[in-house]
Length: 622
Picture (cartoon, rainbow, N blue to C red):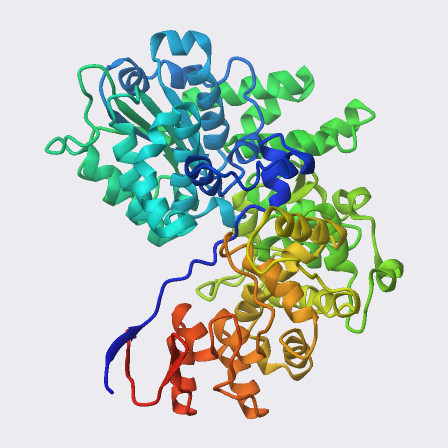
């Protein structure tokens, strides 16, 4: 028997919002889940539920409100007024330099366009999304379109019909296909029953490259004069406002729409007026002139200086004069000054390594555990001597470099991450202590170790997560939710340790690679515990296996070195389990082509639909 088949079914590993976050964000309690909300029975509700892939409301609320009187220049700018007043579909791209308040502007616009006064003049469903490079839920266009659709369908429930065919055919996987989401969005937004739609998308430059390019291509295609996809009907229109840094690669992609850009980076007099308003609202007359004169024309610079002035508050005019006379002239100088003032620079470095490496912002409790854990720790009790109770001291250690919002730790700004990280292309030497001081591989290694040591806690072996059903049910969702609530760092460690291990290239270090193999040990009950939690980030409707092999899991998560080591230790390449049947199948489904070839070269037999195919010819798309 001979057959030709192509190995590979795409598997998206983007992090999904946890059950707990779903409950909080939608105003539900665990009792609400028990009433059936988390697993709605009708297809439309299930579809809407699966579109809620990110906490878009809290992402917007990370931004401070505008100071009264600021941004009036924007509201009165001819390009914004034209975009707002014309009763037809249109797109406005607002570009501005780092730290100039783009996200504050976008957040203000969302609120302003939703206000009763604005709705009486420009009625429409207002949808939004805020890209951020520090959160996996905020840096991919599939999350953006899912958020826009969730808001649109929540406001106009009849429009969800445009998503039902894809949802019925693919389940939640349709939320991971950008082209599919875009087709659904344009179909819904141009539906005669939709009404006007107004979308605000902030931080386009912080979206990862491939999906950003696709999103821009989609946007350009519908606003070209020759295209009528987004053009207004007699009664409705589709409008977008996008913000980003003034990067050339974005400008090139929008080049076919030459009249849509508002260059905020050229509005220096207007921005200076706003900066002075911010200063006037915060500082005594004594220091205003120096701040206005010294500012590098960014709100971020001013906000950091204002915080320096307040922490601690000057006790005399002479002390205030001394601070003002030594104000750093640019952001890099401020960042260096803040971190040089840390009373524990080594702990500050570890905290910052974890913050920049994390695939989503860590909670204070998660950070406390990640910092305290050491090799050999086997329980939370073992951590007690090292725990910092970080909520009380993180600001003392890192100063203004970090901020805490809703008990989660963030860097003060995207420019802070750019200041810290040393890229391979960074060749210019620096005399600064902190600038470009963090190596991405070392940062990932720090967090990888924390995750691995946590997953090796004894409790996950002696009291593992055991589900009452092998299929997703209300009860099994509750069980996972309660278990991860009880074990604070498990949600992060289980879902992201594999990513950090790959980034850190740990397999060259004997000690940590041995610990990683323990995490993959199918002879331990901890393997299924973390893997069940891991799967909730990948496939919300995943059937829970009761029997898996170490080789299958290593193949599934794409760890070539682990697969090689496991085979070298005698793992059966044709071992069977109830996850995907075999390690070869798991590697193929996840499109890990190198592992597929490795397994085939080691004699793996293709196992499909319960039968073996020893002479099946397999072609891999490489």
